[in-house]
Length: 110
Length: 110
DNA sequence: AGATCATTTAACCAAATGGTTGACTCTTTT
DNA sequence: AAAAGAGTCAACCATTTGGTTAAATGATCT
Image (cartoon, rainbow over all chains, first blue to last red; front, side):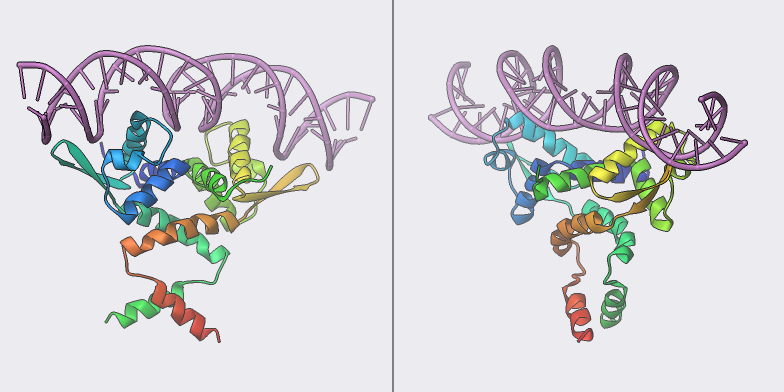
C-alpha cells in the first residue's frame, strides 16, 4: 500500500522519538555495521535492537543488505531529508533565514 | 526535574510524530488561536485536542497564555530549532552542504 | 445567584510500544 | 553431520497512546 507523505512523516518522527534509535542512527552514520555490532554498546537484548531496526527501516532511515549469514546496516538519509524539509518551513520563526544562502548556493552551482 | 537533551528530543520528536499535532502546529504558526478555534477543523473531541496541546506544550512546541476564560495558544519555535539542529548533522549525507552558505551569511552580516 | 461558555480532568477502552525469554531459521565452521 | 553464530519471530508483559464521554472548574454574561 502506498503511504501518504503525512504517514511517512509519522513513521519518521516516531522512529526519531527514541534515544536508542537516534543513537543507532548515529552509529551507522559513522560506519556500516552488522546487527550484532550495533547491539554491542546497548544493554538491551539483541531482539530489542532488531525491533528498533525494524522501526528505523519502516521509516526508511536505514537499509539492510544481506551478506551471507549476517547483515550490513547502513544509513539512508533520504527520510531525514524529508523531516528536515518539514521543519524548514518553521525556520522563519527563529531566523536567521537561510533563503539567501540557498539562492547563493544555487547560483554558485551554475 | 531537569531533563536531558535526549529526553527533550524524545518529547519533541514524539510530539511531531502525529499528523494532527503537526497540523495544529501549522495552524498556530499562521495565527495565535484559542483551544476551541484550534479544535474546530478536526473531527475529534475538544478533550482530545486538549490532550494534543498538552503533548505539544511538554515538548515546548507551543505556549499557552491564559486570557480570562479562554487561552491563547502560540507557536514556540525554540524546540523545532533543537530538532532541526539534531538533524543538521545528517545533512552531510544528502548534500548539497549548507556550510558554504553559512559562511556566506556570516560574512555578509559583518 | 444562576446560566453559559471555555477548557481540563477523570475514568475508561483498544491498540501500539518497548522490553523480555525461548524457539526457530539460515549460514558458516569444525 | 553436528555445533556455533547471526538474526528473526512468537508469545508474553507493563506502560503509553489516542480516543471517547461525563463530570468538574473557572470566568463571563444576564
